[in-house]
Image (tube, rainbow, N blue to C red; front, top):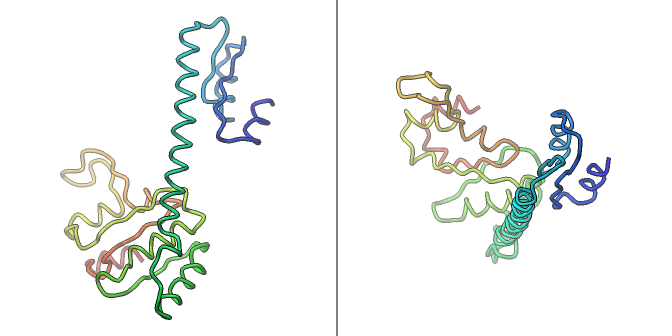
Length: 194
C-alpha cells in the first residue's frame, strides 16, 4: 500500500522494497507496482549499496532523458519555425490542430521546404511526444527490402530471415511514424500500407 501511494505521488522516485517475506508473489507484486528492486532480510550491505547506487543512476538517467526530450521538443516549437508568409502561418495553424489527434497526416511540398520539420513539430506537440518518433526514408530502401522493414518478419519467413524482426509500424506503436518520400514507394507496397 505504501508503494502504491509513493508511485501515485511521484513516478520519478525510485523505490527499493526491503522485507522479511521471501515469497516470489510478493516480489512480483512489488515489481509490478513499480519498485525498482526487492531485497529480503537478512541482506548483504554491499549488495544493498550497489542496488541503491543503481537506483540513483536510473533516476538520474530518467531525469536527463526527460530534460533532453523537453529540449528537443522546444527545438521543434512553433516559435523556431520560420513562418513569415501567410501560407506558412496557415500550415502552423493546421499543425496545431492536427497534433493532438490520432490521425494520419499527409505533408506535401517541394524538396527542402521543411516537410520533416513539420512532421517533427506535429510529433512534439502531440500526446505521443514522450515516445521516440520513427522516421524511414522510403526512397532510400530497395523495394524488395522495404516491405520487411515496414512490417517486419518472423524467423524463417524467407531464406535470410534468421530471426524475428520488428517492423517500423510495430516500433512506432503509440508514437509517430514518418514515412519520408512515400510517393517513391512501389504502388503495391503503398496498397499494403493502406
